[in-house]
Image 1 (cartoon, rainbow, N blue to C red):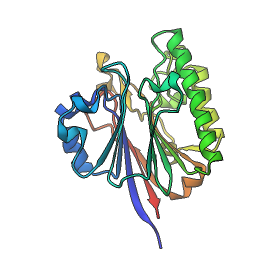
Image 2: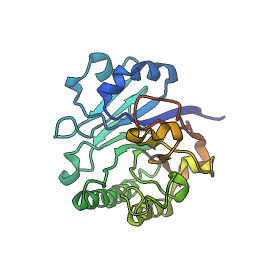
Image 3: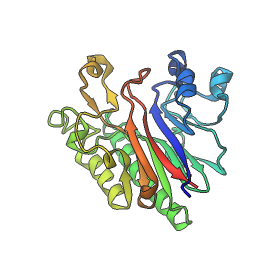
Image 4: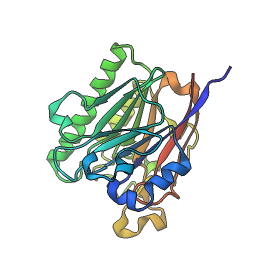
Length: 261
């Protein structure tokens, strides 16, 4: 007998308070995902309206940065996870509030806002160090028997040339540097699957557009947001998609549907 279908969505909202004013909760109610992972929340729960801090019908978990108005992630669950984990357990990274892990019987879900490396060389190093640290976290999960893994969020890197509108012009820009792209190669070679590319092989599909140049209207974008799953979950993957028509941020939501027991 087939299991039930689980709808998971992920969205870099570029400020959850701004997204709230633009109808985030109405959209959440209409789409009704089983799990919504959001990134770049830029807020602590006590700074939020009650209906946003604890949305009706969901258990909300928040991880925020020590620095106010910066970074942060939240995960909204219809069904409470068995356990929640915040951060990597590495102080050098955890102060930026970038990681929430939701542990379920069928899988562990990592909601991550990966760092941006464009500011300067030190932030690029931080981003690459964060990438490598996450690989160690994944190894630890597998050693502990948590081998059914979902990773979602803003990875802040376009993987291949088809994942951004202007690859040649951006070949020297953080977000499309060889070292950043090679990390995604390494993750896929280590047994992970880019869910969107299981269903769509073509170009022109993006999740972020520069708001300063009205790039969204011209679809001059980057695919920076992903759902990645361990190979052992691939048989359960029913679909994966991007929702470019959903406004309210410089990113759009991405999603997938998974069969669970």
